Amino acid sequence: MKIALAQINPTVGEVEHNYHLICKSISDAKQKKAELVVFPELCLTGYPPKDLLMKKKFVARNLEMIQRIVTESKDSEVALIIGFVDLQDDQLYNAAAIIDQGKLLGVYHKIHLPNYDVFDERRYFKPGTETKLVSLRGKKIGITICEDIWIDQGPVTELAVPEKTRFQYYM
Image (cartoon, rainbow, N blue to C red; front, side):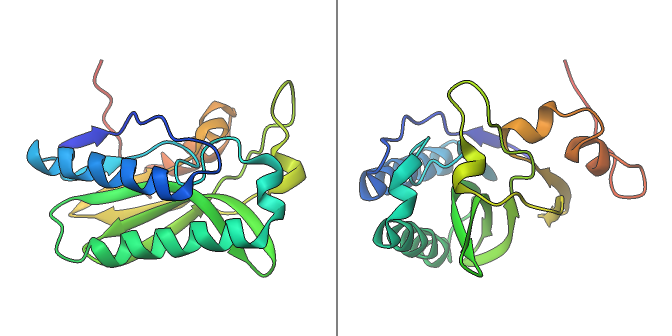
């Protein structure tokens, strides 16, 4: 699977601008015949969105734009993993949407929320509780967000259990 890493520089609070950066990266990835484009953590809102998350209109706009991306991906040859803010049962989550051909295949909620130095994620987000393994174009892909990968015996360990999947690492 040819994977493109979209190293964009989203602007905090500028959801519309960030949407256009995402669309440009998708277009660039299509030209390079990538099958999957992976975007940064919270790229739709910019990171860290902090107290903007207290504004319901801001969170709603972010959700509208992720749905727009899902809809617009209907005829796309490239799948997407995009960081956004999810809202479920009045709780906010630092999330990743897995999108392919007009379908939202799943949403992963970050499990380990940093709360040290400049990070204050527990103030804004509820932690996720489940790892996410998706089948994408015949491949099994484990989804994590930032801090989740750094925790010993954390989500990556659970995703790498042989019964669930086998990963091959190339250096």
